[in-house]
Figure 1: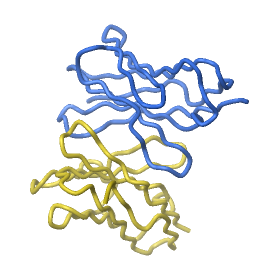
Figure 2: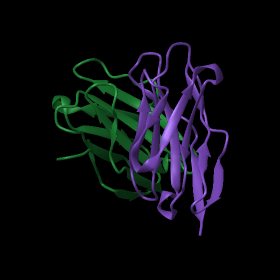
Figure 3: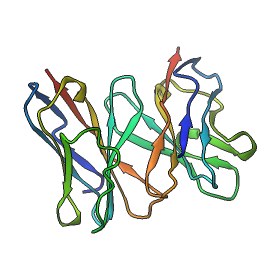
Length: 113
Length: 112
């Protein structure tokens, strides 16, 4: 069965600094991968997704992610973090049946002024 | 509506009571999912509806949990004889293509 691991439960960065959130997946076939963001009291918003093609995916709010098959990773990056980026971030993969999202445990991002 | 809606947004109930949570998916979306997000936990899959097919109930944690989807649209998640460990945010999502999921704002359930 598929699984997703986000090794960092909490990350704190200074405003303006770069950000990388880690995501590792376990899945036999070519995965479909997603990053979602959840602000306090809000639902999940899709940041970006990877299905095939170019392994560097651009998303909303200046985020990007790179699919690395050799490392089973799909890390999320942003060159310069804004205070409004403080939120919880979830990596997800479509399951074996191709019909269900399996989520990682999430990484809570805090931004220092 | 433009997005997935859920009601109520908050629900406080006493242990042992039954609760019903409602999800209105995006019009035309054939797939509907329920997830649970407990404090400090990730998102746990509960149940999945696809068109008129039998739902995938593999994620339901106990027989106190059930869900139905009427007319291929609105879904209701029912929790009977609620327990304190049922306290969580219940999220609903819908999808048309299987490649984009749209989530509702969730229902925060508190069992006293």
